[in-house]
Length: 454
Image (cartoon, rainbow, N blue to C red; front, side, top):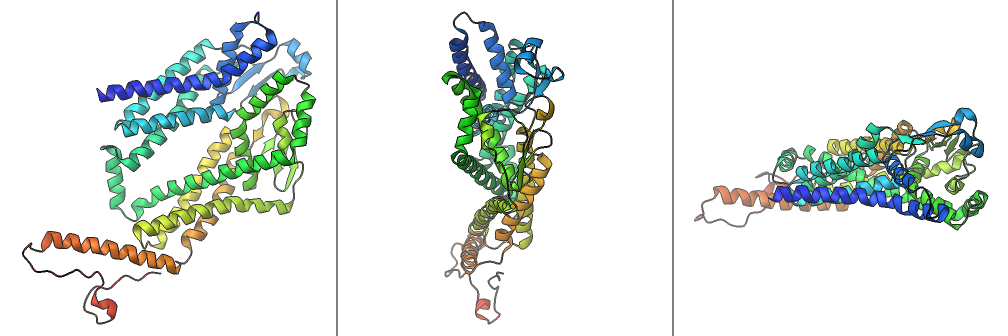
């Protein structure tokens, strides 16, 4: 009965998640349709347009085919009438990830995380298939396979990651607990993966926050250029509202671009262009207000911004090392080195995935390539995070840290000796208090001595 309830609730969560994403697209489009075309507009095109935008937000490329009238109206060359738009408005993807993560955590707390994740993913796939089958625009079509598979894959990643994390922390009474016990039995190596994941999470929280601050600063410094681009569009207030909503839909994409800029490799907005701390050469680009935030130039001195990812790695290393000392006391150099390397490698992998999601085509010709290069970003960000994490994880131990390690060791020794006494000393035996520091620590060589710390 409990498992059936988990299945039903997970399916409901998935349906609500899909409804929220679709409503986020449908609501502004309905407003635009009503005010721009009136009540007598062709409402049959509203739902296919909503479905296409929702699919694009989950990574489905849109194949655009303009008719001859549209080509003449837009001034596009005839050979550019057909092109692909694959740069995703990642706000829709973030909505799905966050909502799926909440569902996955609830399923884990109910004790049936695998059942909940599978049920939610299947339900989300059913909704995706229904949307793909009912929403099709010949002029802006998506691959049926991608439209059906991509959205539930995003949901699976969000729900699965959150469910496994919650089950690992709180227990599930099954597979995750058995794996956790095996890792715990392999100290200190068993904790390496846990601290690598913790370090990577800290790094990306810091980087995403720094990317958001960089965008806010660019808005303050280049607000005039953004306003000028709004004016050049010559749109009414409704059109300005729609353009603003479009810009917000690409906000996570722009944050990834900001992270790539801070890391050094930067990104491109068209074939042959470059935007990095050392320079900017973008050429002719669409007059979207968001592009007004792009810097017009750079300097070799701007490479100082690469210290931001280094600082993020150092902050993660400091947090991880503090947790290591408080939970385990002394730990050898090799596990700490592996944690630093693992944090850098996983950070690079996640950065490559984010760059791939934030890259794609936005039009014909040279606009077929935009966004950061995944491999360059992975290499640069991984190296910078490793430098920062290694500084804090591998540095000589501070006097206060040594004192904390000795205190932790003494507490563990107390527990170990007390456990030994409870098991092997008869209840009627006369025993005195157990001293965790033997006489060897005083130099007479009569017993086990306190460990040395370096």
